[in-house]
Image (cartoon, rainbow, N blue to C red; front, side):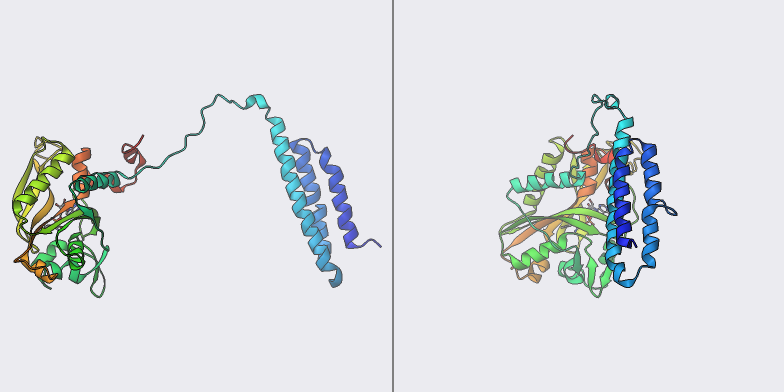
Amino acid sequence: MATLKDRIEEVRKAFEEAAPQAGDAKSVEELRTAFLGRKRGRIMLLFEELKSAPAEEKREAGRLVNELKVAVVDRLQALENGALMAVRPAREIDLTLPGRQRYVGRPHPLTLFQEEIERIFLSMGFAIEEGPEIETDYYNFEALNFPPHHPARDKWDTLFIKGDLLLRTHTSPVQVRVMERTKPPIRIICPGRVFRRETPDPTHLPMFLQVEGLVVDQGVTFANLKGTLEHFLRALFGEKVKVRFRPSYFPFTEPSAEVDIECLVCSGRDPDCRVCGGTGWKEILGSGMVDPQVLKNVNIDPEKYSGWAFGLGVDRTAMFAFGIPEMRYFYENDLRFLRQFGAK
Ligand code: FA5
């Protein structure tokens, strides 16, 4: 009596004989039904038989049926592809059609802008430093002269993580970290991401980029600060840009100043401008002479050394450089917007 193994071999031979006859899609489908059809397909019947086969035959026969099934499925797929090609004659392939366009990525506009800022400061002899985005209360506040419960902390409301860990609200903590490990002369910028509890609007975001600047040496004055920042802003926006320094307050600088740039979105002509509120000016950075107490906190002698620092909002400044009325565009990932920047 023929064993299950013999019947598997029989089915394999029958398939091999029938396969070369299947020349079109219809006959390939008939072949599939004859061998793989769920109810009466010959291979499926072999699987049924397998269930009641004696244990000593089962293992070997099971392997053979499975191998046969895989081979039949592959062959049917190849026959089907051949049949499809046969109904699509070569002359229907239009070689003159343009190829599919591949999207090539490019740097984000804020990355390009930050690199431009870095280039200007590197050319003035500054070095680039970085610090952690998750900071301690000490570096973000206390070392910068914000004692606990000081009302100035309210301006920099943030997300606390655990214990005294928080998302840094500005890049100024990097100043402290650098001054702790480096002795003057120091001339650095620190670009990075910062976080605040903020309701988004055209000029405010809860997460944005800043570039911090710090110079510490003997005989450093406010005039150096003003000259450097004016040179930087002219290099960035062109010689004619209007800039103004306004007295301000930061716990870690004394005296302090904020720097405004003329509103390059409405040029002061739109009383309802959502960017400048009709004033014609918009603040882009805070700055000042490093407070002597901050120098003492990092063991730099304020009698011998002085310094200045600034913190520039990259997103807000980029908004003017690119002439766009809305900072949120930078984070919406709309390719129609993003593709307008960088290499074409
Ligand atoms: C500061 O963050 C200080 N650390 C700056 C500083 C550094 C002063 C060193 C003195 C010495 P301020 O909160 O003003 O300051 O922020 C600085 C700049 O960040 C602003 O001028 C603005 O351009 C940008 N900025 C502030 N808040 C936002 C916000 N919510 N969204 C986008 N940009 C912002």
